[in-house]
Image (tube, rainbow, N blue to C red; front, side, top):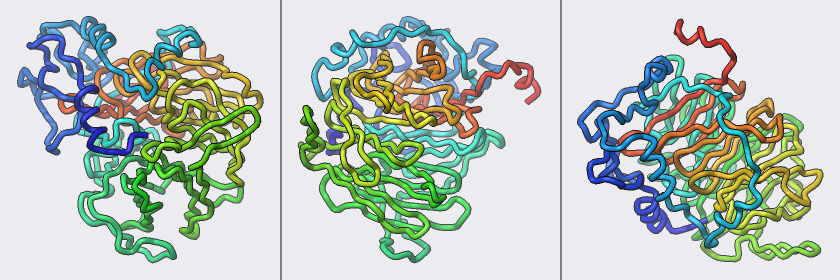
Length: 462
C-alpha cells in the first residue's frame, strides 16, 4: 500500500475527481477528494439545497442522490458513459486491469436483491487514504457507524439521528487502566480503518494507533501503538470471537505485521511478520519487499484456523492462524490487493484487487479460482458477505457496488449505480440492510438499501 499520505491525497485529488466533460456541468469545480474545510457543500451548483431522498421520492422519479439532471446540460446516461471512459484506475502494475479481462466470468445483471430505501445527506462519510475503504460498519438494520472527518459517528435510520461517538481531532486517552495500554493516548489521530462489532469499536490510525472503545461504556478503554516503524499505517482490523468465546481483534499494519489482541485481558497474544520472501515448493512470493509497500488486508476464517493475507504482491497467501506458517499461495491476480472476506461456510473466500477483479476461492481446492468477477471502473476495494451466505457485495473505488447471488454460483448480480467515491459498504448482521458510504464534497451521503422481501406495501406505512 502506498505509504506517503501527501502523494496519496495528490493522487486522490487529481485522478479520483469526477471528470469534467462540460464547463457547465454540475461537477465542474466539485473535486472528489480531500477538503481542507470540514464544511461540505449543502447546495449544488444551481444553488438548490440538497435534501434527502426516500424510497417514495425515488419512485416518483427523483434521482436517489438528489442530482437535478433535468436542469443540467448533460443527461445521467451521457455522464455515466463519459465517466466510464475517463475514470483512471490506480494500478501499481501497468495494464493489470486490461490483462485480467479474459478470465472474467460473464454475469447476468439486472437483479434486485436489495431495494433503495434512503439517501441521507446529513451524514458525511469521508476517506483519508484512497486505497483503504473500510470505514462503514453496521451493527443492526437500523444502526451504522462511519468516519466523518475526525468524528466517528453513529447514525440511526430508525430515529434519523446522528450521534458523535468519538472525536479524534484533539487528545484521546484511555479512561481505564490495563497493562500495555498507552495511557498518554494520542492527539489528532488520522483514522485509516474502522471495525465495529456488537458493542466494541476499534479505530486504526496512520501512525499505527489503535483506539478501542466499548459503546456501552464512557470513554476509551484501551490505546496502543502497534509499531513505531515509518510504515505504520493500520490497513485493516477484524473483530472476532475465539472458539472459547473470548473477543479478539486482528490488526494488519503497513510494517508487514499482523497482530492479534485479546480484548478480555487487553493484551497482544500473537504477532506474525512477513518482511521476507515466503517460500513454498514451486512458489516465491515477496510480502513487503518494498519498504513503502506491504500487506494490505487479512481475513480470518469462521473457524479461526486459516488467515487470508493479501497486499502489495499479485499473489496472496493462506496461512495457519496459530503459527503464521504459509499453507498455500493464492495465484491469479495481476496487481496488488486490498480486500478479502470469508463466506460464513468457512470454505469459500474472496479477494479484491487493483486489476479490477474479485476472485472467489474454495479453500478445499485452490488450484484455480471458483469465479473471477469484473468491476466497471477500478479496483475492488471492499468485499462483504451476508451472514447467511446468500449474497456477496464488492465495492469499486467509486460509483459501483455489485451484489452477487453467492448461493447460485455468482452468475447473477445487482449493480448499484451512483456517483462518488465509496468509503465503505456493510450488510447488517441480520442481512436486512446494506449501507454504502459515499464521499463527495457536494453529494456525499449514506445510502441505505433494504433486502427485498416482496413486502412492498410496508414502506408506504412508514
